[in-house]
Length: 513
Image (cartoon, rainbow, N blue to C red; front, side, top):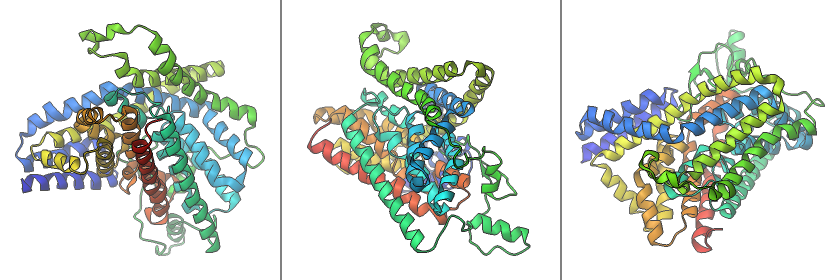
């Protein structure tokens, strides 16, 4: 028993360490699972072919459509220029004085519209750079501002968000993406407000200390010293490569770069709009329209269209013997994303050749992220299949008799260990979902509350230093963990946990609304 537990811990250390160092989770996850299987005495090949692969395939079968349409939509928003028009318009309206607020709002809007986090990072980076330069805000705050808009409230708290984190719980709790709208909106406001308070406080603190936008980063100092023939003295951050914008959530792929990260990335991103040349209201609203279409179509399918149609045929065995309630969450988001894609085509028909190419690129970009997340799900299934995992499971359920608390603790813990919100969420619900739903039903707890809590719980401890999205974000901005992770930690770990606790407390005492 002790050796088997040690095997699970060792496999987790391997998974975290190798993912942190940028290795693909597609290879790392089965390797880490192998360590746990061997140390537990379970059959190796059977664990891989009969447990790991079916879990991987099951995740892909259920959620690949969302990854596919999301990646295509994100690519179309980039190729069309609508994403940049939207972000540039917002920055023009509020101005550089509110650089941090503009960065957070622009990233949150794109995220809420279903654009992939990787696309959002590369879209926002040049605009945020121009805004921070105008406002003379230290570069070290830029990653935290972007992270607050992408990885927190817009992903899992706002009702109707088409991101995978808000869609996964629908499969297990029979809910839809608008579950507990009042609680979700309240949680989003709390996370947004607390995150902004911290960032504004830090801006004033750094300004009082004399820090400016012009201060060289560790990478820039190293490069300046290298070009000048000197020895690096600006920090101990290891040399890294340039982040791949298509890197998956579970690990950041890199490619070698001889120039500083910020310089190399500048060559891969179009220049930010100059002062006075930002997109006007018309361009901004046009850029916003596909996002509004997605939100509207999602709500229409969820509350009007699907309930009004006859889907009795879903009960047939060939269709999985399911019901419309069980698939509404995935179907409504998929249809909504397709509506956004169609609108992008219709608004600029003359660009159809570029858009057709974007369809191919977007489809290709969807493959790696879904395989990485699915590989983590397979890893979780193997760990859950080991006899010793019963001890781990009992420990988690021993935390409380309340399923809301158990769901929050288990989702947060597993998301933190895997460094992946969607992976941790899926592993938790695949392992405990049925039991949690039964407990909630027995105690009269709303499935909508279970949905919102598990979704929000996945976006807290997942943002620890080994998270692939955090590593990529820092690489894009040309900054190190040493320079920026403190602020990232506050706005993506501490603040979301506070918002989660508030939603849990209100939901359990007042009820779901």
